[in-house]
Length: 290
Length: 97
View 1 (cartoon, rainbow over the protein chains, first blue to last red):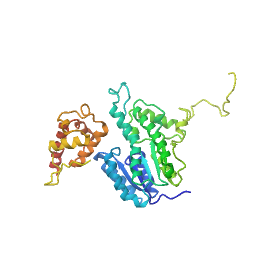
View 2: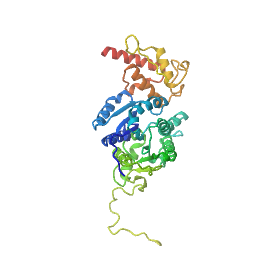
View 3: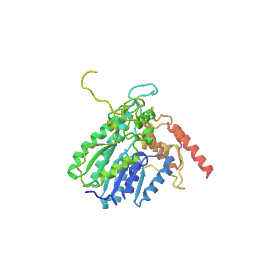
View 4: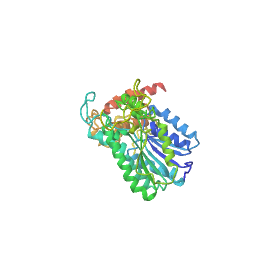
């Protein structure tokens, strides 16, 4: 049955921006203490400090670390600290992988892009946006911080099945991420730990705005989404809170759409009705003749 | 991995010397110090990707207690360029203090 999340801990990778930020705040609102890992230059210091204050304003603890979540050195340094903080209060109840750092260039030369992707960039993107989920899970598991009832969420995107010119490396990373989710779900099932990928719809985040061709894409998504709006970071935070309020691990190994059915809406069919067409009686689908 | 500190032990304030900077950059990039020549281009010669570039920037900001503007990051493409940028920023900071 539904449990309260109050007093538990979450670890959010990619906590300073976009969906990771919204999840940190959303869980704090539910009484969850937050360990946040983010990687920003000093230009964002004030913004991150304000976020930490806002989280603490909900009466929970916040421990934020400016470090490269994809590096082994960061995990080696932080996992013992996280154990110290959370070990006696149930470990990490919710692990969120929301790392958006990758190379956005096509695989082949193309107008507007002089240099196609390099192996280093492709490997870096896969390492940050996919493989780091496995490494964090390994290290937290080894430290005994993932326990029965814990939840793991990885942020994927419709880019897994839809190609954009610059998105090849990220699309590959998201595909790998979803595969990692399925594998971890099976391996962690005996311990009662659920692992799922959340596929947000098009959401206006700093990471999305870094995609060179995002403007057209966003405009079209706002029209195509059958809810007639884009996904908001809070929609995803809500989903994480809802899915976490159970000790059950039976919802596991899925990619769960958190997109208001955007992926399934035929392009252009759900926007404002075109003027001067479709009478109120509707048309019938005829089996023969025309 | 051990962290290299470049602070001046006498004063506790960051001091800039090129060899210390070279050691720090080599450590971040996991390269031999000898590979980080003054003019080796981080991207073209040392295979630095955008994540490592961010790693360098964040570490420099922390070690030297400076704040990089987006427009200044273009200078961080070689050891010499990075050194010149830091020297200028620390000087500005000294004047402001």
